[in-house]
Image (cartoon, rainbow, N blue to C red):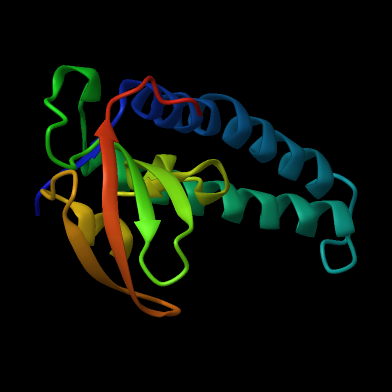
Length: 161
């Protein structure tokens, strides 16, 4: 399996969250379970059940992040050429049907935030744009149907998370 790119910021954020879950949140929750267990009957002990549920969530999140961490590769997009659309590129598009312009930056899956214009490299739009140049027209199958865009510009700018 090919590793997915992730920015240095995203890599640090991922590593920090994983570290916090393993070294702070999980031990603290295990302690909460022990304290709640000391309160008696476990069948009707809401604190105990809440702490167990919280621990399940933490364990699942650790597993999810550990898998992601093993499958990413830190990439500095500022060192890449952006003459074509690639990881870290900021792309301004014109929807050929509505003539609306929109701008997106292509980032790793863990870093995506569509509300901020940060789209995952695995999203249908990013996949359709990869390798294209300014002036190219691109037809992309999106969840809402097929759309056609013209690439107005491709640049690199510092990514703001």
